[in-house]
Image (cartoon, rainbow, N blue to C red; front, side):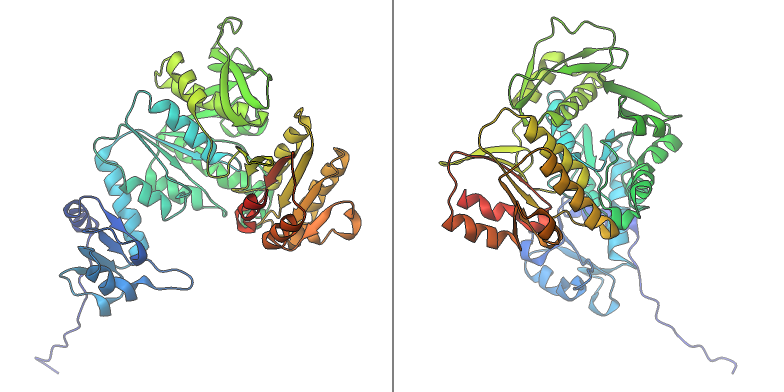
Amino acid sequence: MEGLFIFIHMPKYLSTEELYQLFIQCDHKITTDTRKVINDSIFFALRGVNFDANTFATQAIEEGCKFAIVDNEQVSNNQTIFLVKDVLKSLQDLATLHRKKLAIPIIAITGSNAKTTHKELINAVLSKKFNTYATIGNLNNHIGVPLTLLALTSQHQLAIVEMGANHQGEIEQLCEIADPDFGLITNIGNAHLEGFGGPEGVKKGKGELYQFLKNKAGKVFVNADDIVLMDMVKGLQVITYGLNKMYDVYGISVEQSEFVEFKWTQKNKDLQNQPIVKTHLFGHYNFINALCAACVGNYFGISEENINDALSMYLPEMNRSQVKKTKDNTLILDAYNANPSSMRLAIENFANQDLKNKVLVLGDMFELGDYSIEEHRKILFQLVALHFNHVYLVGENFKKHTQDFNQFQFFNNSDDLAAYFSVHPMKNYTILIKGSRGIKLEKIVGFL
């Protein structure tokens, strides 16, 4: 039919550059939760498995947000509520654009264990010279990394970005978003085996950081005593640390107490007259973490005195290798997270400490899939081999082994164990508390 036109409404999607202008108008303030609205911020209506924040866009504006970003055309008005094709992708693209405009060096950290400890120690050291910004808490995933980048301002000189993952491809995606210049893989262990598809999958997934930096001609900090990591860094520019004086930074542990104490220096220099750095880090497995921070600080020109001061003053928190003295006992809180690698290290270190009246409270390790039964059983055999007698185990994965290890006490959950301790109080013990975050072992602290 000549002369007949059919008009099809095409929604106007906000471009990343247009979104960036809104971001500037809001003074770089972002809200993702209407329960925690930041006045005059941009609200990003993210979708989750059990929620769709598009339905809260109007509420976010009413409660103080200046703009809202949605991917549901029905709630957009193009005045304060703007439409994009995908809110999460828009958040990520905005973060990448912001990162490129700032153009500051970014150090990316991933690994199976101790990512947050490395991040905190490195930040403590680098902040002695630079205005740094580091990932807050555990904002290390596909949402957390963009939020970390968007918190950066023109005043920052360096950023330390933690990257977590439980599937292959995730670290690659986070690298594309953050575009790091430097990288660090803490270690390759048996964490998130279910999602990664086994130990080799973990290695491949974490190695995506190395591959990104190889393509970019970036640099990596590497524990040169770790055979697995050294095999993975072939063809990369590396800054090495470890126990050998041929490394860029090397050191030795000086075991004078239950806390990490060590000496370090630069390549080929003599350790003998170096000062002992006394830290508040419990567990000698933290020695290599502190040495790594010294290596990073040395590379970026932090003085030896300032590096030592930063490491000596750092206080662990958030239930990570944290020593807490109650009126009755001494608690070693390492209950922020757990996997087979970190659990074995913590138990072995505890066994080697010259402490009286040792007690272990261990919680289930999550995300192990088909490896769960085997890995929990290995931990139980380790406890037997090290002759631990006072052991309390929490969670259904450990409880599957009750019959074969009846010398230990098993509990369904932390509430049950807390109830037990309320009736059977403990006094004058040193208690290691270690488990996955979901077990919530922090619940028992008030009863010890």
